[in-house]
Length: 141
Image 1 (cartoon, rainbow, N blue to C red):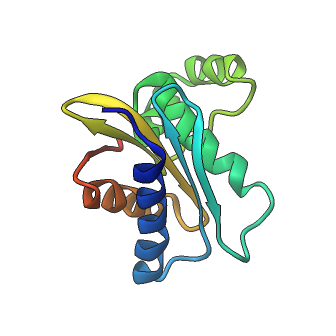
Image 2 (image 1 turned 90 degrees about the horizontal axis):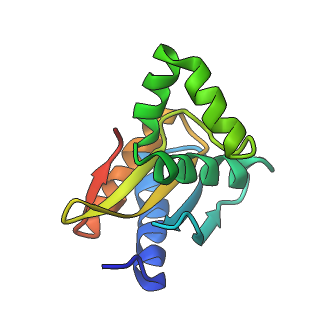
């Protein structure tokens, strides 16, 4: 299964609904496909100007390394030079903190969600809930 536009819109919209339910600060959500290409970007009113880049950096890092951004964060603690090198290869766009969650179906990566705006743990929880609401597997690492 590919991550089509309708599914990406559903996941992104659910992220906004879940963020409101959780009482999160204004968020920005990026949904990308398995090739790392942006499908949907939603930015709530009141978010700062770098949030679109941060959300995409969390999601794209997850797809590029095949790991949720929490796992990338943990690896950065253990192997900082490796993550620095990966960030250099990614043109500085890798954001190695929780909030980038892989979307899996039948074990295969079909995309990722990146959320930013609240704490990284809350961003991640919101993304996971939206992915699971779509009947897919959330992999935060």
